[in-house]
Amino acid sequence: MLSSLEVLSRVELTTTGAESSQGKLKALKVVDEELGASLWRNNPDFPRLLSFAMASLLRMLSDEDMNVWSLAKEVLNKHIKSLLKTYHERIIFELYRGIKEGGTGTPGKGTGGRSHRIAIELFAAVCHRIKPHKGRKFIQSLLPAITDILDGEDVLLLEALGNHFDPIAAHLIPFLTEAEAKKLLTMFFKKLSIPQAAIRRAVVSAVTAVGKHYPLRSVFQYIATSLKKMKTELSDGEEDELTSPSKAKGSVGSESVSTHSDIRVEPDDDSKAEDPTIDKKEKDEAQ
Image (cartoon, rainbow, N blue to C red; front, side):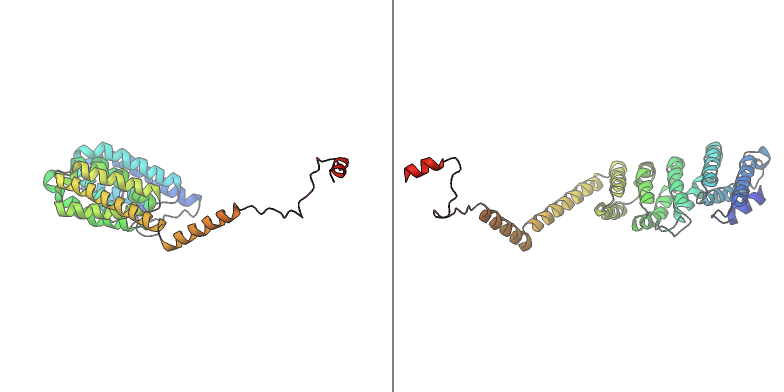
């Protein structure tokens, strides 16, 4: 298994051919079989081996070949479920590293968007096992990673953070101070002006999670006040746009055009056209 993990930790994530893909799939299957064997689980160095295996599997999630990354995800999910009860601290730490070292959230940087997104998803699923005395340390270490994600341009990564932020907030947000919670909310509020609807929905979910799980009412009031202020500024901006000089000038011009278009120009008496319904004989008699 060690040789297979070594291959997975160094192999290129671009598929150059069928032979390259088959080699990765074979190594993943070996890791899957050996990681669940009692021979390895009874080894005193198994926690270190588990860390190596999780790092390699998270890395393979960024592979270009769908068969490779889907198998890596399947193996990772399978062994997290089977080992979580015994090795939850090691598993949580490796997923935390996957989030923290996942990059800036900008496409083309970091270890890969898919790996980063799945690390967030899995961390949210297991973070309830974090011991209370370690909660503040985890959330303080995650704040810079969350800031990097919010400063990035990866829409899918931002959406993943918003969709899976509720369980993270439920177990870790209470360990923040009031000032730290408000600072985090301010970073989320900046993304509400983004044109992409998916990002706005994700941000709303995250803000709701913070307000729901933070124990102090003042943070919820801060959310309400901030949103009300943003709404007022938006309404004032729209009103200023409608009453700007250029808009007013345009409206006057259009009104004048419509006024002139209602004026009917009647022909002179001498130039009036003869009525075709009047018979010519009747006309001569009238004269």
